[in-house]
Amino acid sequence: MAWTTPKTDWEVGELVSAGEMNAVGENLAEIDRVRKAVAAHATTADLSIPHSGTFVDIDSDFNLTITTAGGDVLVHFHGVVVNKGLKIDVEVDGTRQGDADHGLRFEGVDREMMSFTRLVQNLSAGSHTFKLQGRNSATTLRRHAQFWVREI
Image (cartoon, rainbow, N blue to C red; front, side, top):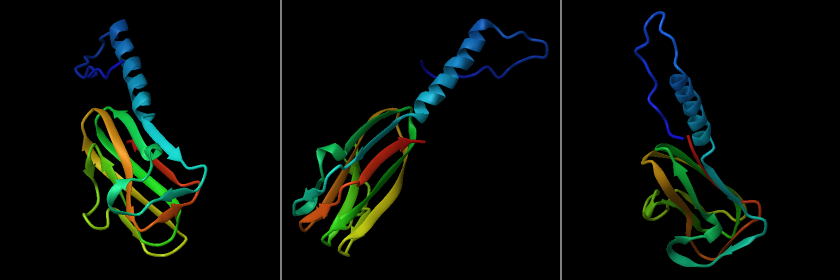
């Protein structure tokens, strides 16, 4: 089903047709579908992140793809980092979101919770890939770290 532009030129006393009511039902189903455009991954074990001088994918499980109706997407990550120096970023369809050196978040303290939420605006309708990336000296990401994306 796809969104149908609703009728807006109603006149007093006009009857509603079956086709118009079906369009309303299809629009409600489309709103529900969009609200469910979400992808997530949570680690079940500690994850060792090798040293890298450039931003690289942290793990293929942290590469998430959703199909959107077009618009805005919330991106979130949180997890405990063991060993200092992890710089973390998100790549959306091949474009990193943070600054060139530190990405979206830099962690300089050992065994500390690291988190961020990022609003990615004005994505076109279609499939989009979000990759959690890191740049660091060897680090461990503790189990139960979560990375998720959701169309809003």
